[in-house]
Image (tube, rainbow, N blue to C red; front, side, top):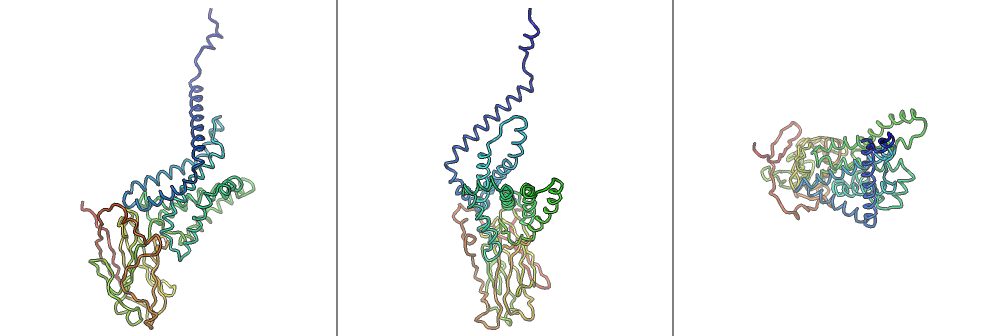
Length: 419
């Protein structure tokens, strides 16, 4: 006779228990595999920063030639960020259900690799687009210091273990940087829109840092947090002039009394004296490089002794190797134009792309010579590395001219394909 106990013992296990056991087994195998990969990569971790820097340098120049490659690099980096950001939350959820989670040393190592990837990937963009004679130099030097810090293991691991709030702040700054650099490349967002989204992301990812820093009851912490968040966002927005426009940079500048619109080149020469300036006016020529597909409004802001005299809007489009040629023509000058002048090339969000300086003086020896010579900036921004890459046909711009009472603005547009 078959007993009921025998029947109960031979009955199949519940489906939920089987699926739970299978999931646990798969997670255990995945954890073991990740730990094996980390153990394999640790001796070679010194290679990661130069590889990331080379990837950033390649993306910086290849987004013009092979945009999909730069976008794929950026997408891969963002996916890595999502994995990092979800690690602690997923780890807690798995632990509550009895599943294994990665050891802290392994997750810190993975986070370090991602921080290094982000910082060294973005460094070429910052090194080229920074106006080194401005406060942007401080921002770029800060990021350069963070990149160096991320490869010094004793300091990095000490920060991760003992100063968690500062570690989260480090993390939030990296998030700000990766959003700032990748959005114009991937989605053709303007520099201003990318900056706003980067600030929003930084504020959100600063929450763990602020919660770690604030002490007291839970209600008090949240009240203080709600008060600090708008202050943090406001401080970031006020400091935007110190943030380089990571995907826009000037490749050439010139000052001239005349301009050949057909050839799109400055011409003629004049000493900028108070008597000569009103007769010819002055052309400010800039060539600005931007990612393919990006459409952006920039401004030539004319300043006399620090005071804004004119703010001239110009439309640019990305994709031309030598940069998108844009120029403004100022004809109305103050009655006493003598003194130092500056033309700030700005984004619509108030970030400086570059600057042109000249001096108007009755003494010709001190007055600037506007000779129409096209000058390339010093440093990486002036190096035409795109010429070393396999070429594509150059695209020309078709200019249109808009008249205003104060000045003449020449707005060049890239040639478009007919529908």
